Image (tube, rainbow, N blue to C red; front, top):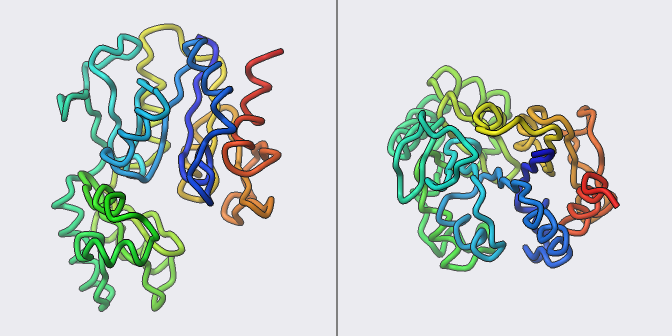
Length: 267
C-alpha cells in the first residue's frame, strides 16, 4: 500500500452549496480501483454517514462525531481489530464519551456559564431544519447521536471562555461559528487517525494525505504527512487554518478535492 486518504466531507469532498461530489467521481473510482483507502473523518453521525458511503460505494473505515468513534467493517483484514468492540454491525474503537454523558456535560456547562445552552437533544426537528436548512429526514439523522452533543454556540461568551469551562468539567469542545460540539476528553479527529494508521496489518502507508476545510479538521490535518486545505467558494481558506503548512487546493469542493489528489496518483 502506498497511499491512504483521510477526508472531511461537507465543504471538502462534498460541495458546500449543494453537497454533491460529481466532479470527484473519476478520482474516487481510480482510488477504489487501486484499493487505496478513502476514510471519511467528519462531525456527522453514523446514520448520516452510512447512506452517503453507500452512495459513494465506500467500504473503508470511517470516523464520526469529531473523532469520537471509529467504525471498521468486521471483515476488513487490513487492520488489527483486537482493541475494538462490536457495535451495530461494525467493529468500533470508541474515543469519546457516550451520548447520555455528553448531554449531562452540556447541562453542567450551562450551569457553569450561567446560560441556557440548547443542544440538538433540546431541539425539535422543525427547530433544527430552520437553523440548518436540513431536510426533516436529515435533521433526524443529525440528532441520532451516539457519542457527542452539538449545541448552539452562545454569543455571550468567547470561544476561550467556553473551552476553559469545558476543560474544567472534564470534556473537550470543538467551538464553531453556529454550533459547537461537546465531546469526550480523549476524542479528536487526529487521535482517531493516528490510532488507525498504527493498526494497519500490512506495511504502513508511505503517503498519508488529509483533506479538510475548517478548524475542526486541524488536528486531523496535523496528523497526516500531506495536509491539503480546500478553500471556500470565494477561493479563501479559513483563518483558523492559515498558520498550517499545507497545500491549498486550486478549487473549492469536489473539484478541488479531485485536483489535489491527482498528483498522488501519477500520470
